[in-house]
Length: 281
Image (cartoon, rainbow, N blue to C red):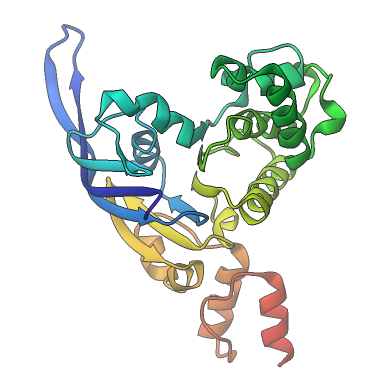
């Protein structure tokens, strides 16, 4: 059974003027159907304002459908009786870690979620230990979050979600406020959690390089899924992505330009190592 499933998902909101009069109704998500299996690493790509973050917020009931249905581990997000279970199943990591970190000590922050769930104290500390170890932050457990780098803070935020033992983690542009080094360490952490812990990952991003190791990619524009497939299938359609005002990973762009210039290269090259190997052959 799918861990996440949407059927003909539509979400609309109204814009109002200074007099609180409705100016227009905006369809932010338009007839989106997707199905995500347990343990998958899914990336949702799109430019700013494409609707990808609105989709993310539907997946753990922060927003509810205008029409259509969202299922999380078999639970309908519009069923209020399951709201708490849904949010435990699908944990959310936001763009700014400062909005999620509330304690003055790292280990206390990671234990905050399980404590509010009523988890026994001994079990809380086991979860804190394991979560910090999983994201490589054990050495900082007694540090103040304010002394951490942006990438380290985001790893603490991920550990805090992990400690609640979700089956799925939704990351809504978790690297948007980070420098390249911080982005790399966060994405590496997410990949390791997916591979070693079997946690389903849904990554919302507009950084192409972050998605090359995903199992599947959905490309969203104006609330509609315009493209879907493996990273190789999606990024081999560079011209189509450019029509959607998106780029491709730099090495993929280079390989495409070399191919146009007459170099015999396969389509959909995703990494420097792949390009080097193809050129050597």
